[in-house]
Length: 357
Image 1 (cartoon, rainbow, N blue to C red):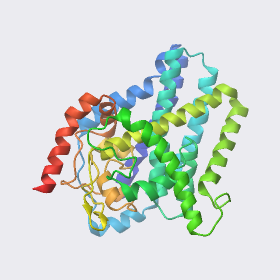
Image 2: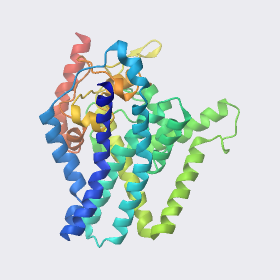
Image 3: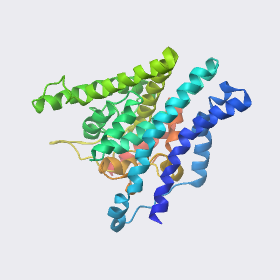
Image 4: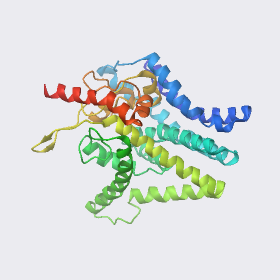
């Protein structure tokens, strides 16, 4: 039964399938500009409707079963399978983009579609793997991040975000009242810079030269440059621009989700610094379908309390701050600050009031 439940996370592959379907339907219909928007329609309309219809899954794996479930190799191999799928999908998508006569609307739709899918598929899966100890998962996660050019996430997320989450020191934690349009540019800029700074600090403390093969940021950047050069050799300037644009949009997708995950939440200052991160410092959502398609990312409260826990055993807590919907819905809501604040600000105030009562 547990193995069958684990296999539901294979629904993640429905995401790249939407790109393939859009390519196929465009050839059948002769309307590529329209079909370029299909993946977005799936992700932001049909998925939320089905997600809401299925509802929440707040059941947790029993503590006595956690070790057995976590050790099931299916959880690891589903994530690893994303690596070839992401690379193959990105290649096919690029070839279709270059070969298809798209108008401005089609270009925008396809780049947004690929960017959102890359963010949900590549960065989200990488997020799961870089938290694990094995080199295979660590570097598979790094490779996924390199496909979108946001490889600094591997360093900044682990050594920056998880240390400073829900404090003013964290560029990925939006304070109460900040809009997504204020948050997004500073998060992208500060996180990218922080990755280089954190890696340089690590090397200096270890007595190693900053410019050396020991510098993970340098190595990953060189691999990304090699990949970008390969794309240019295969598909020319149009292919390269596609590759760069989808990476920027994927990184932006990640930071919108960071905004959703931590908006308005704060860790209290103590004499020793900030209080320990617990399941009360991240927004949680236990909608069943979107969690199955996102490797339980929406059980983010437990992830920040225990970052090494595999996605299959992440827990729902009733007293964690709860989002009113899954991430696809909250993503769209965040893009409209008046609606976002109308929905979320009362929840932030209620959560803080509950903590102080």
